[in-house]
Image 1: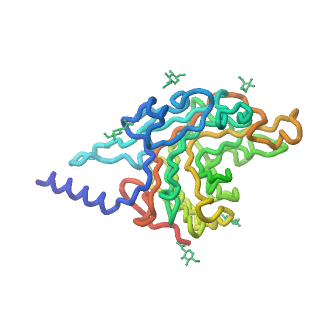
Image 2 (image 1 turned 30 degrees about the vertical axis):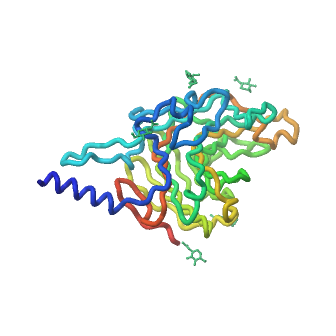
Image 3 (image 1 turned 135 degrees about the vertical axis):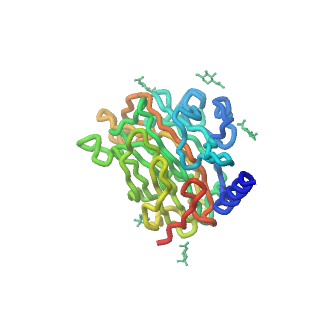
Length: 317
Ligand SMILES: *[C@@H]1O[C@H](CO)[C@@H](O)[C@H](O)[C@H]1NC(C)=O
Ligand SMILES: *[C@@H]1O[C@H](CO)[C@@H](O)[C@H](O)[C@H]1NC(C)=O
Ligand SMILES: *[C@@H]1O[C@H](CO)[C@@H](O)[C@H](O)[C@H]1NC(C)=O
Ligand SMILES: *[C@@H]1O[C@H](CO)[C@@H](O)[C@H](O)[C@H]1NC(C)=O
Ligand SMILES: CC(=O)N[C@H]1CO[C@H](CO)[C@@H](O)[C@@H]1O
């Protein structure tokens, strides 16, 4: 009897706190490597180099385990964990040259990139106010190179700008900055559309960095929630205007997560080529990777999820 009551109570509690999830990009437990070669939902495309998607993207339930925030509990007295997703590993190496449209003349030799496009239903994810959740963990066996700039989560409208992004490393500059890595290079930075840093945190090993970015698509504002490992998300920014982002449908974009590595300027390139980061520059060709989990988008209507079925109020000032 008591068991049943506890079960019902926990069901009611989780209902009470449930926020409407618009897109769930947490890799299902039955998702396989062959599924990403499709790719099957919940992903729509993998921006990548010459090999198949499963060469660049791996899924695992325990090595390492996903962020603890969204792990459920099995009903009953003992709070047994109920895993709900797999960790996603995204890798780049020297083969990670994206060739848009398969036309060799367009090969992006300046970049090395593997990004998962989570979902591209822009109207569903990007009207009203929506909150983009994601967690990021270092792969210490395949570290990023802080002398380069990386863009590792972003929303990209058709004009190629980013409504917001997460960045790591030394910002690309032409000419290359005198001292690399730069003082901000070891941080994860969340920037707005105009590349102002809204939140910055040192990116350390063995730590899940949990984020939620609140985007008001009508008023064009941003707000950031963050935490580490098992801590619930907390507000870490004020409401910030993001008015350089385009209003309306042209400002909506695809939600990417993954690794895009910018080059260093090659001093032997022509002046025109030095500024052409897409096609020119120095890449060492190293194998590098990041882990992701907890990728989902929710509506603001019932608050912002902070972990363990709890919510908090949106950022309003
Ligand atoms: C995983 O299982 C669910 C529920 O049975 C099913 O709907 C889904 O298609 C499966 N996913 C894959 C990638 O096989
Ligand atoms: C993808 O590539 C890997 C290694 O190159 C290979 O083992 C695998 O069979 C390929 N999968 C598909 C579906 O082509
Ligand atoms: C990496 O790839 C580029 C472009 O294909 C090539 O020119 C370069 O030699 C490769 N570097 C290494 C270290 O293999
Ligand atoms: C959006 O802007 C309008 C006009 O300034 C204001 O009345 C409204 O409260 C704003 N909405 C939010 C959610 O901030
Ligand atoms: C954080 C912040 O205030 N960002 C910018 C949003 O866009 C406007 C308009 O371009 C900028 O002036 C803000 O600095």
